[in-house]
Length: 132
Image (cartoon, rainbow, N blue to C red):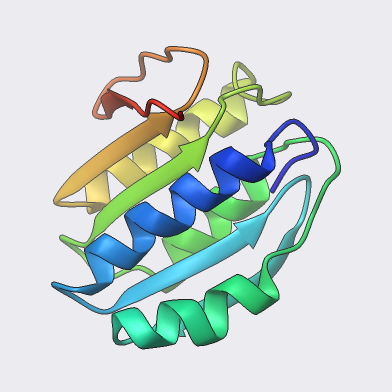
């Protein structure tokens, strides 16, 4: 929840997480420049009850800490989705690029879901998320 994410974008991200939770349990890493929380939701109802009330942030966007948290918590062959506008300060730093690569290597599928900038990273699929 970086400061550049609008309320409409946050609502769309939650809607996408809600949809995913209809098929499988989800773990949501809440981050901006820091990791604030990891929220486990086993159903769509839990997405509403747990995730909505615990979203926080509003600062700048540094993704390396959230990638490290994801690597520590994820299982091999998990599906990983990063929801962002991709205005990420450390996106092009070598260590951050290594973390992206490590997550993609461990994941069944790694997806960058952006409301703004298109980002191409090896091993990651890019999805443009339109917000009305």
